[in-house]
Length: 89
Image (cartoon, rainbow, N blue to C red; front, side):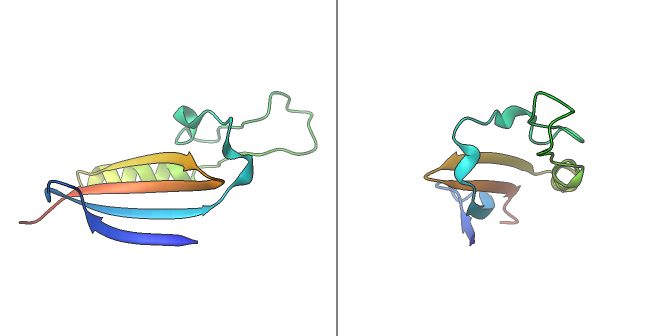
C-alpha cells in the first residue's frame, strides 16, 4: 500500500495519493470506476463478479463537496487514486 500527501508542482493544490497492488488493471476502462454499481464483467451469469459498488462514487462526491477532484490511474501493477484540493495559502 502506498500513501502520499504533497503539493502539486505549482503549489496551488494539495494532493492525497493512495495506491495499492492491482495486477489485473492493465486493460481496465477507468472512465467508469466512479459510476455506482459498475461491473467490469460482460455477463451477469459469471461466477466471478467484479464490481465497484458505491464506495468510489461516495468518495468522489465527498471530494467534490470540498471543491476537489478525484482521479484514478494505473501503472506498474499498482492502482492509484489521487484527490486534489485547493491549497489554503
